[in-house]
Length: 214
Image (cartoon, one colour):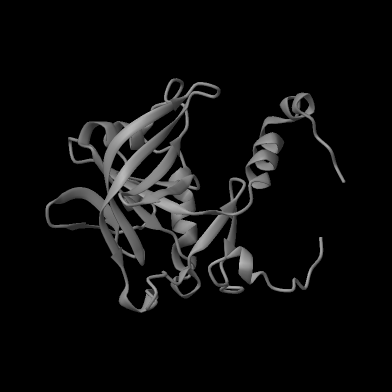
C-alpha cells in the first residue's frame, strides 16, 4: 500500500496532488450552481462540494475556493443577489456541465457557451438548469471562513425543491439512479450511480449476522 505523509503530499506535483487528495474523499455529487448578476449576466459552474447540513430547517452547504487570487463569478453573484440554484448533473449532459469549469469571461454565460438552457420560476430570480431533473432554489444565509486554506463554507436554505414526480419514492427518497445522477472524483472523473442496496434504519438490537468480517 502506498503511504503519503503530510510532507510528501505537499511536495507532490500540483496536478497529481490535487487529483490524489480530491479523489481520496471518494465520489461526490456533481452539481451546477446557477447564479445571475445584478446586471443580468447568467453564470453556471460545476461543483463537487455540495453537502446536506440539515433537514429542519433545510440547509445545504457549499465550499467555495479562495476569492483572493481569482475573480469568482459564482460567489460575487450569490453575495450581491442572495439567491442561487443547485442543479444535479445527470449522464445526458455531463460533458456540458464539465466544461462550465473553463475560465470564461464575466460577459460570457456558461449557459450559452455550454449549450445549457436556463429557466426561471415565479418570484425567484436565480436561473435553474432546465434539463436537470433535481433542482434546488437556495436563499443565501451566511458564510463561514476556513482560515487554513482561505476557502469558505456557504450556507443556504432551500426555498424551492423541484424534482420530477417519478423520482420520488413513497418514503420520500429521491431515486438518484433513476435520475441518471453522476458523481465526480478528482477534477474530471465522472461515475454513474446505482442503488446497490437499501437497508433498514440501524438499531443496536437488530444487528444482522454480517456476511463480511473485516
